[in-house]
Amino acid sequence: MGTALLTDLYELTMAQSYLEHNKTGSAVFSIFPRTLPVKRNFLVAGGLETLIGQLEQFRFSGEDIVYLKSLQMFSDDFLSWLRDYRFSGTLSAIPEGSIVFQNEPLVQVEGPLPDVQILETLALNCIHFETVAASKAARIVSVSRGRSIVEFGFRRSHTPAAGIAAARAAYIAGFAGTSDLEAGKRYGIPVVGTMAHSYVMLFDTEDAAFRAYQSSFPERGLYLIDTYDTLACAETVIRLARDGVPAIGIRIDSGDIGALATQVRSMFDRAGLSHIKIFVSNNVDEYSIDRWLAGGVPIDSFGVGTHFITSSDAPYLDMVYKLVEYEGTPRYKTSPGKTTFPYRRQVVRHYRDGIMDHDEVIRMAGCEDDGLVEPYLRDGKLTRPLPSVEDIRKHCAHELTTLPGPFRTLAKQEYGVNVLP
Image (cartoon, rainbow, N blue to C red; front, side, top):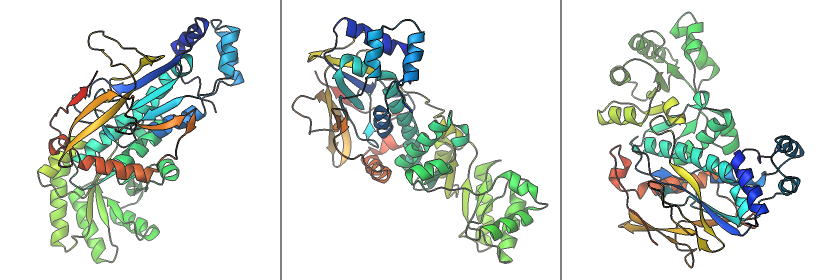
């Protein structure tokens, strides 16, 4: 299925006018965040593989042309141009999983002006959403103190496609797994899950429910214990363990989770069941994780859903797709609050003792191999194989270790990015 109508109308009206007025020279557009949200110290670049995949399918079908003709605003010559459109330009980018900051070009697209103008909406959609999701996930991982984080958000994602993309972004950023089977199949992400309250409620007692589940899945006995009385159910888990019905863990999904986890841990330890892990869910985010762990609450793993999948505290980025160069001459805005920088750019990162110190955004000419920005497409073709999800995940994990310690906390920090002339 083509993706060419995944765009805004004005992309096509501008492209037709460019062609009619012979504005077809080589242009460079840059995708970058102007600023970081107040509640973000850094971003994690995402969406590049998705964008490249979409560019490969960017075709105007016969049905698309019929629809556009019905709008009675496009010329026959322009519709013929659209019918033959194939992206044949150049794309460079900062690799997925990299830590990035304000005014740094995540993606730069170069080609004939009409060709690259019509990609604006699709390119921003791919890069923006997955960068939002990966950045939220990395922020959660940064405060988790090594605890396992599982992605539970698919049911509350804005669309099925968004849920799958977010699960991939979360895994890249360091989550241990996802509940979504489609994401697991596509990307090899470990899939996790146990039972819902409906399962427990279907049986006459929690004892009967857990015995039934354990008989079906002997190695997966992680029981949901808050359907009725959480502490009474913890006693049931202890009794079942003594009767030969073992548990590898329990999940708490409601109530005062910090207090309940502390009490349940004490009960299990006194019963000699210190191996039973405590997993918690229910509107978990980095703020609750940080609060619980800073307070010494004994939680082993977290399920995060709604607040992650919607990036509830920072659901969007001030990210733009701007013309920065045309036929070798600079193009930029000077409007207040929306100033942009001209020319193709490279990002040079400076470290002190292996820790990020500051970045410089410099003109690309002559320094293509000296920074974070790397080539990915030339003449519309891949210049090298894209990295696997596992490789991107390893890259992101390393990147997070090079962040200054304060940037891995929830306190606001400002990183130095110098944009040079």
